[in-house]
Image (cartoon, rainbow, N blue to C red; front, side):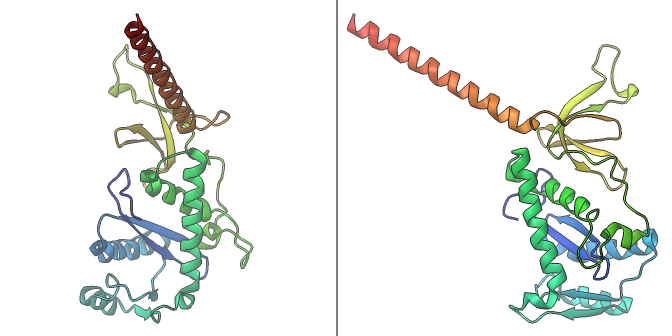
Length: 250
């Protein structure tokens, strides 16, 4: 990803389970973080889901074939399969998943009228949604195949919509507002809360949120308001120029 995200990330590392198609992504600031995220992924899937990684298939990118990562995989007894250069079809599952992820990320950003620097939040949300959509090969959602439970979709909200996040009582005074306005940017994996953008690269995580989904996306309305402000400014400038010209003629 060429544009740095609001959280300072530049790359995506994607893990896709070959059978269920369940995927997880990690956001990286630098490519040399791949090994630490791989260790994190292996530990999380083992402790949370009781699954053991047996085979890792990747391309020949330098971040995947360094001595450190190869030594780690050997210690863990994990077979590392590499695709032949310029043969993405050898890792078809991952390639298709990444292609779909990019397309869905672009759609989310476009629909919400958000700039590219929100790509990381859109990508996380796209992955979250993809895991909860049925796949053609299996007829079930990756989430169900991975967890043996059907996904609950009651908490799904419109990406980029206007949202009011509740502020905990101990964090606001008697006269302060009990909620803060922002833009809904997805779901927090660790706390089961919602991610709300407050501006100035600040993201708040809250479990109690009021969503305004039946109105145009907040960012789209904001863009229209800015456009109106620009048009008003142009009219004022034209008026001032007309007055100056009128004074010269007099």
